[in-house]
Length: 393
Image (cartoon, rainbow, N blue to C red; front, side):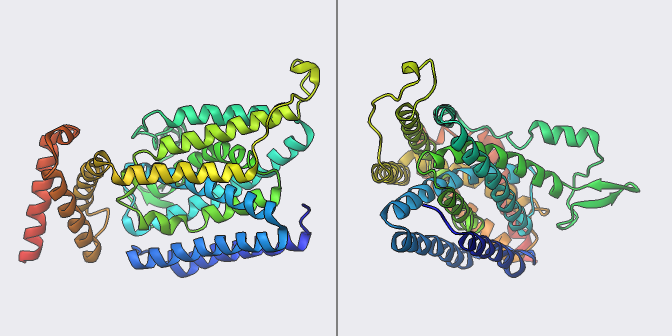
């Protein structure tokens, strides 16, 4: 289906307007979003995406609407998985809580720009070379395998960051949300700029995974762009809404691996159906089944439902969440550079107390998963002492 230029223009203007609104009315002034604020705006952005999909059914037809929702749900699930890495990066750089919104919004904008470039590049390749579907399918199958590997906690210290630290004069402290500051009489890069470089680097890697995935569901460039854009909008609010619950989704990587592997197989089957590669079936199409978009949407929703429900009801998931959160909350409470806002410090302390109670009540087999338990006990003791001293003044 061809989309008129004026529709493209209105869509891009609308998306840019949403990003501008997000910055000027929510992100520009440093603050920590409340749970209520995050829930309301996350719902609004998801509602906008759903309304757009309904409009697609009405004005574009069943195929348009089905392809859009399949793409949007897949990209949204991948975006949630990306939040794990964002959390690791911001924890590694100890980004002050009040400034995390700016880092997230930058990551969203950069990701949208990077993915838009990949979208048009991918569309050009698909239109010129049918064998690109084989490449996309292989990328997704390899990505599915990589998702099954344990996530590393040192992903923030990638090659680019190490290179920047060696070449440029950098500081170990933040100066508000400034990207540059004066240090020892010289202009220096702050960690705020470094964390944005780290986020940008990971965004490029995410684009390499997500764009082939959605092209496996639709080759309509307008659908690919809008589904990708709407999946990214609201990601900042979602980060603060489900903060502390991310680690509870212990089977999410398995679910995403299954989805990407399924789409990878779908792409390979489509490539065989459209085959013109000389050394495969003498360059002739191969008579294979093709998976419909409706079937794809059903499979994606089914896998995600099983993954999320399985994670939430899993005793191991609850135990892992408590162990990760109690350590993180203790670190955040003891780090005054993280936040000095009394309300935020109280929220962190309350979160630590809740997680600590769960950890204490864990069966021995789950408590065994705690790394360096003596160090954790020492941190918790210091956090309790500091809180008691603060409120006894």
